[in-house]
Length: 216
Image 1 (spheres, rainbow, N blue to C red):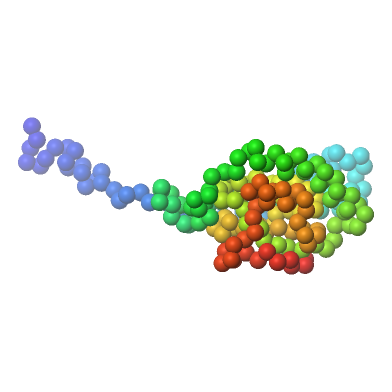
Image 2 (cartoon, rainbow, N blue to C red):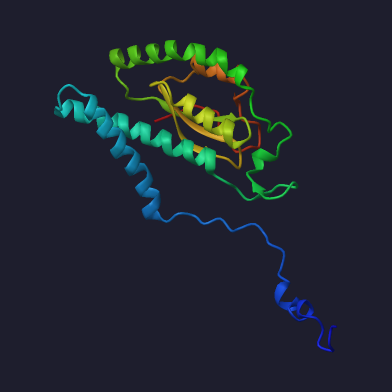
């Protein structure tokens, strides 16, 4: 029988009650961790490049260092696109980047990526030939809208960085933007196919994106 002090569960009531769990605050990495990630990628990629080189010469080391730097930037951008979170409240629970709350946030169907992927080898060959003939200097930056959702951001980041003629230097999940460096002012045929597949789009007015060409 319960006594005048109540049952054990009643007595534990105040201790068992807790405030509703809210979203866990996002912990931002410190400067050391932010620097360690690209450095780790750069070291691994450079080691892999030199391991495949027939002879380690100053030229090979320079080319390998530059290629590894571009690969490290793409890897970090892809990781942030896939795993990054924002602060916009999702009515279904949790917190997601504001761009992910769009009614169009369903992932792009894989079948729609087949035409761009079919063109990718030709784009890589064309960019490689251009760089061989003219060098990789110059180019400029532009902002591109990306389909909402971490999966599409990751795919867009990887595909836009797959060819030597362009790479993604930054991702803004909140506004749904990619910061892209291109060697040419106009989009490549491969990039236009990504637009046609629905993975990329021109930033809307007011999104904070600047689709204009900014020479590097």
